[in-house]
Image 1 (tube, helix red, strand yellow):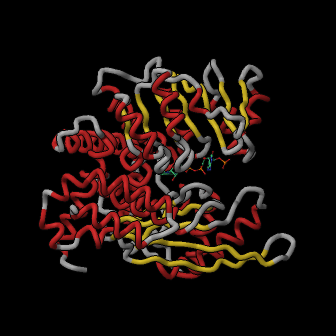
Image 2 (tube, protein in one colour; image 1 turned 60 degrees about the vertical axis):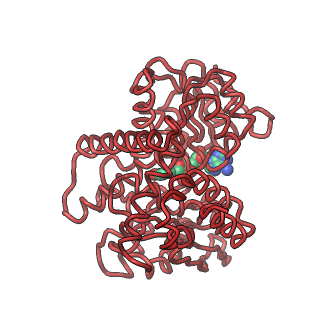
Amino acid sequence: MSYTKRVLEQTIAKNPGEPEFQQAMTEILTTIAPYVDSHPEYEKAGILERLVEPERVIMFRIPWVDDEGKVQVNRGYRVQYNSAIGPYKGGIRFHPSVNLSVIKFLGFEQILKNSLTGLPIGGGKGGTDFDPKGKSDNEVMAFCQSFMTELQRHIGADTDVPAGDIGVGAREIGYMYGQYKRIANNFESILTGKGLTYGGSLARKEATGYGLVYLTDEMLRQHGKSFKGASVVVSGSGNVAIYATQKVQSLGGKVVALSDSGGFVYDSEGIDLAAVREIKEVKRGRISEYVNYRPNAVYTESGSGKTIWSVKCDVALPCATQNELHEADAKLLVQNGCIAVGEGANMPTTLEATEIFLKGGVLFAPGKAANAGGVATSALEMTQNSMRLSWSFEEVDEKLKGIMVSIYNNIASAAKEAGHEDNFVMGANIAGFKKVAETMMALGVV
Ligand code: NDP
């Protein structure tokens, strides 16, 4: 049995009941197998056994008091996965579906993603099963303060620098940073995605969505295609989806559908982003409310049998959550003439659906490359904080664009070198792995 296969089997056996983690492991270890197995020095140094095992897993209690005076308890996680190339870096997710499997899969993906950015950042991820939906501002603040009261002892500007993710935006980062500052009595850059008045970077909010579109655009361009005149479906309507939509529109594409966990809206005339931003960013409302702004749009509820992927499009950008695009959806997209998929979310496409895209000749940019613009700009925020300087929006955006184009070139050439031209899943996994593995070799058995 090959080295990679053996480690994959051991890892799956050692982590039972963790389907998302096992899925990410299977995808990554299977695609890097030809590369790893042709380098016996990796086996000798136990690189894979060390890589699959997090350096540290922290699990903690988060007690807080709700508006009725009732004590609530949530569970918090921080997985400090791999610090070979820099301090742990990765977002914090607030969502009821969060468990150890989800945080470990995200943390493992993050190691390779951060490596692809070319910046000195290791991989980590955190979160909690707290659901901010329906909670008052006061409750969100109480929760964030309790979360940070424990987390603060494990993080630091040169140790671990979390950021936002699902359910964690400007409001939550502000409350967490405030509590950190109060406890630690310093202004260290221990979180990114901060507000502009206290150390945040211009263009960080836009970075994941913009970066996704920059990379997808480069992939299209290199194949003689572009966003101009293209019909685009974007799932989700949160941070990533909103700014991906904005960038697609600025490049002359037409976004015709957006969603949230309740359902999706289809607007044949093109999504009115101002309306979406009012619903989501101002009112914290549901995407179903979109039809009040655009009566010609059609809303379809989740569970009706029809998903957002039934909408005909040239380019699909899944930007909501993991495993939101299944085999049947992929078949439908291919049948409807979709030419490219760019993953804004982490692992939104199941293994079976990815296979359909690769076999169907659809250009497929995996999340760890396509959505790396967020973490890359977070690293730029850390740089600005260290220098005590703020760059202009244009300066950050230009750097982001350069990083995304270089990630594309890196994954494209890794795929080609591996003899699988245009298989960007393989290209991203190999290119991301290489830098981390080489560094782990250099640092010895630690
Ligand atoms: P937000 O919380 O801002 O938005 C998430 C969106 O996805 C919402 O519209 C939400 O709908 C929808 N969604 C969440 N869970 C589900 C579900 N189970 N089924 C259907 N829809 C769902 O998060 P972000 O935009 O920040 O993150 C989206 C994805 O992008 C995640 O996979 C995240 O890990 C990834 N990502 C984010 C980065 C960032 O910088 N923010 C960086 C890199 C990756 P609802 O409100 O109904 O729950």
